Amino acid sequence: MRTAVFAACAIALAAASGASAQTPPAPTSPPETGVKTVVFETDTLRTGPMPAELVQKFVPIHSLQAAEDLLKQNRIAFGWQHSDVDSAKIPIDLAMQLNNLPPKEVFMLRQGEGWMIGVVTGKH
Image 1: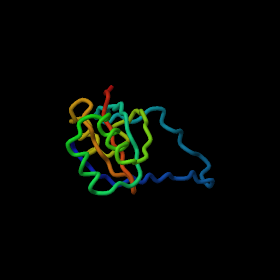
Image 2: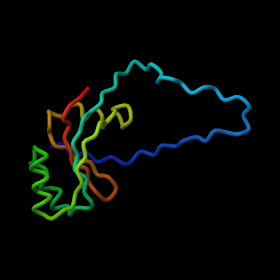
Image 3: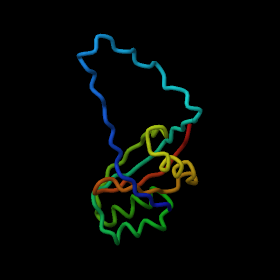
C-alpha cells in the first residue's frame, strides 16, 4: 500500500469587477496544453481521526473490503463514496501516484483530521 499525505489545495476565485465596461467572453473549452488528462474512477471510505496505531494496521491491506472490515472491527465510523476524479484538478504528484497504482490497490490520504481510504476502480 502506498501512503501519501497531501495538504488541501486552496482555490481562489476572482470576482468580476463592476467597473469594467467590457468583460471578455469566458472560454468555451480549456486551452490545449498538450497534457492528456485522466479521469480516475474511485471508491473511497472517509473517516474522522484515527489513532496512529490503527493507521499502521492499514499498511498490509490490499483491498477496500479489508480496509472496511478493519474500520468496523475498531468501531471507526466512515462514509462510502464512488466518484470520478479528474487528474487536471488534483496535484500532479498525486495524479502520478494514482496512475501508477496497481488496479484496486488501496491508497490512503490524510484529509484534515480524518482519512480517505480508497481504490482506483477504472480510468478513462
